[in-house]
Image (tube, helix red, strand yellow):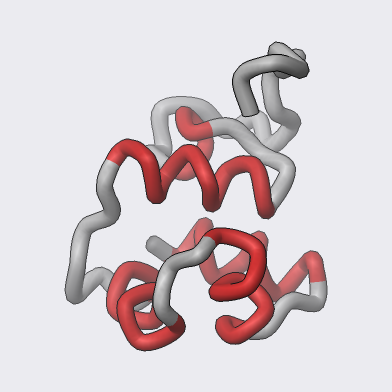
Amino acid sequence: MSRLKELRKLKGYTQLKMQHLTGIDQSDYSKIENGKRYYTFEQCKRIAIALDTSMDYLAELTDIKTPYPRNKNKQ
């Protein structure tokens, strides 16, 4: 989950800001970020959108931070 924390800090976001952007409770988000809890598919999607990255990057399946072109109707 180091990528998650790194991206959040690069954006200048706090965990509380992430709560507002994703709807994930700050304490749950902290657990996700510190590897004490896994996120669901839907949570991963919301985090990727909030941090302007791809779910693949968060899952460490790629080293490219830039998100794929998004479908405007499916966010």
